[in-house]
Amino acid sequence: MNLHEYQGKEILNSFGVRIQRGIVASSHKEAVDAAKQLTTETGTSWYVVKAQIHAGGRGKGGGVKLAKNLEEVETISNDIIGMMLKTPQTSVEGKKVNQVLIAEDVYYPGDSEPEEYYMSVLLNRSTGRNMIMYSTEGGMDIEAVAEETPHLIFTEEIDPAMGLLPFQARKIAFNLGLSGGAFKEMVKFVSALYTAYVKSDSSLFEINPVLKTSDDKILAVDAKVTLDDNALYRHKDYAQLRDLREENPIEVEAKAAGLNYVDLDGNVGCMVNGAGLAMGTMDLIKQAGGDPANFLDVGGTADAQRVETAFGIILKDPNVKAILVNIFGGIVRCDRVAQGVVDAYKNMGDKINVPIICRLQGTNAKEAKELIDNSGMEIISATEFQEAADKVQEVLAS
Ligand code: GDP
Ligand code: MN
Image (cartoon, rainbow, N blue to C red; front, top):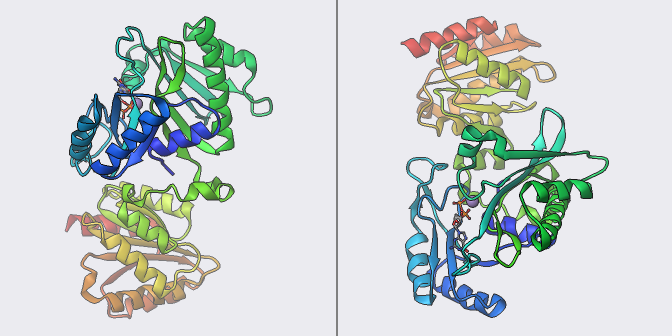
């Protein structure tokens, strides 16, 4: 689950990681109140207005602006809230901004040498260990740094049994070229950051930039935090941080219906029972010259109701030109699923406007095929994997 910058920063702060402080606002009126309160709390007189969307590169897209007084906070917030913000990480239409973070300006006027670093914490899947990735080249495009000057990106792997050791935190501060007070501050920052990552059950922290001010404070100016959904049961208070407005509406609906659905860009919808078979089916569609429009695992109980819900969700995607149903009847009998498909088809009437290819294999597969072939519905049946692929190819070609 992805979080907004302001939510990520709250989590960091709760574990003692120093952050650029701010208050979230949903209107330009709230923004002005937030700025006033921030001045009371921090003494700041300049502010940064930051669009809160689930995408990076906001600065480049005009979603991060400096405001030197309350009037500017009001006009800038008014411009940003409601805009469609386009960044290198959004679609071409951009993402609608519902909220802004009013943050203290931490690049003090006259501070000639603020230093920006890059730091992330994530799982290295090939070694199965968490690692801290960091660079002196923060603030800008880290992808470009990785591409052009990869030697400027360092990594530090952490032994899960030991945790982050003090010498590792010192090594990071050293490699970032720090000394004196800033060195000590960085050691504290890195240690608190790693603790926060582990304790919050996150799968990604990306802090770009980490800032060193001229008075040697180290703080997180930005925060991209991804929480591990599978650990949310341990963090009841985090579950409410989900912002459904940022998520794919079809996926949200599927989730509410208890379906395991991931939206993709292709033209063939698939309905499959079991995640492994779903992946195999997606390969099959590729082989047949199509592209999967989705991943959908309907799970073990494919009755008419469930099949109908699944058809409805697949058909919300306007790119779908055909649907491939691929069910293996192990515990669930194929004829029951076939009956479900036929009933759903009958109920949905002309809402189904694309060809359906249905392949059922396993217990009672023969009865299932007969049931479909004799149903009078326009469902193309198949028994073998390849046969199903060929039929997908045929309907796509026609
Ligand atoms: P991103 O563009 O989505 O990564 O958003 P960031 O939170 O990283 O902000 C983008 C850029 O805005 C940063 O790299 C900074 O250069 C700038 N910025 C952020 N906070 C401040 C601030 O307090 N003062 C000033 N002057 N610039 C800031
Ligand atoms: Mn950033």
